[in-house]
Length: 308
Image (cartoon, rainbow, N blue to C red; front, side, top):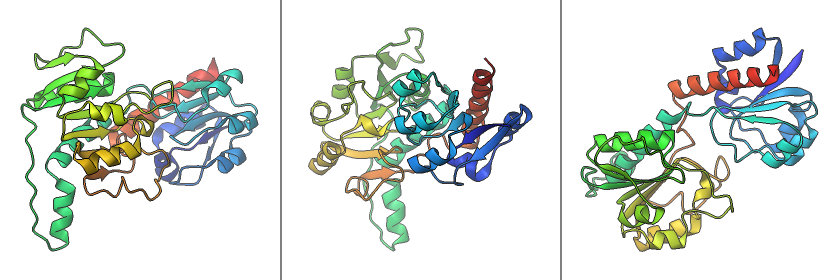
């Protein structure tokens, strides 16, 4: 039987009914270590001999791809493909497939959740009560505040719709703005500089820059209002961690929330332990609905690619 490697942590631990489609089509499913993100050595051991891979966010290096004799397609259960060596995949004629939009609402709702958690210091307040303290921090209300969105694809659009529903003003920057998207008079497209200068909160929903440099570094932070809140549910490489830490310490940033990391799980880091930083373990698309959508789409994409 032809083999397919399945590596997303939620699938190796819990399985999913959509995987039965692969079995029904005559494929043998191989799983990486349950509930863990596979490293390069595990991929080198499991992937050779597989015709397909249903992949999570783990790095798939050139070395792994070169060793994966017979591999025809990699299907992601999400949209991010930065972790796959695309140049090597193209040279080896390995297709890379994305589950576009499958987890968009889940990620968008997490971004909105971060906004409330940051502006009302919810995690710190909860931790204080549990530690026997009674320490209150004055928050701000989102109504009437300006949200800047960097990247207004499907996720960014959901965030914009939810934000205007809360009575916020929304400015969105996108390299290719969708002129047909106009959810409210309180929404408009603007330049990246306008988003930086005018926003009270900024949420990132874009790919990493092609030059590999962080989008949010010292220069971008200096152009923001003092006391802005920054949210990243997109790519860890979008931010300069040291610059973010310095901005938090100076008060330029009032708070930072992230769901994404350069290494998962992240190593000890003064940024992630900062009192005004909220961290979650890459759960943006980890909802029942998003996992169902993404897994089904990834399986269908893989079957289509292998049958072409």
